[in-house]
Amino acid sequence: MSAIGRTGEGGVTRLSYRAEHADAARVSARWMHEAGAEVGVDSWGNLFGIVPGSTPGLPPLAAGSHLDTVPNGGIFDGALGVVAAIEAAAALREARAPLRHPLLLLAFAEEEGTSFGVGCLGSQGAAGRALSRAPHRAGTGAGAPGRAARGGRCDRGDRPHIVRLSR
Image 1 (tube, rainbow, N blue to C red):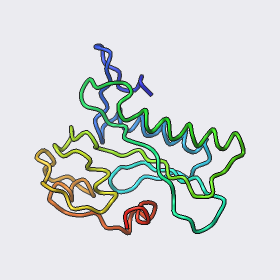
Image 2: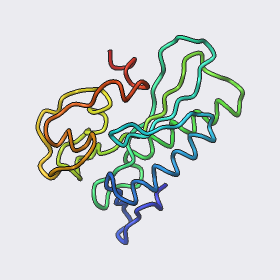
Image 3: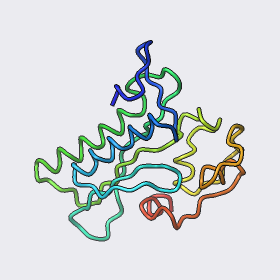
Image 4: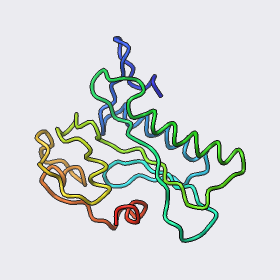
C-alpha cells in the first residue's frame, strides 16, 4: 500500500478522487474480497466491505480508516487502519472463527481535507451529517462530493451499510 503514491522524499501522496487514491481503493477492495467481504463503494467514494456474521440481525462492528493522504504524508497514516481491519478479517476467516456480528470494513475518502478543504468529508457524508462549512475548492462537482461542496446532504438511502451505525 505504501508504494501507491510514493514520493521521492519518502512520503506518500494519495489525494481523494484522483488516480493514486483509486489505485489504493482497488487494491483494498481486492483484499477485502479475499478476506470474505462483499465490497462496495457509496456515492461519497467511501469503500466498504461487509463480512457476514454468524448471528442474523445483529448490528455490525466497524473497523478501518482512510486511504487519502496530505501531500507527502506518512506511509502509515490512515491506510494502516484500513489494512489492519482487512488483516483482522482475513485472520478470522483463516482461523474459521466468524464473529457473531457482521464486520464492516471501512476505507473513507477525503478525510484529510486536501481536495476540498474540509476534513472528514467522506465519513460525514456516510453518517448523513450536514457539513459545518462548504468546501472552498469544490466548484460545481457532480454527485455527492459536489452536493457537499454546495452545503448539501447525502441521502441515507445510498448507504445501508452505515445507517444502522449512525442512528
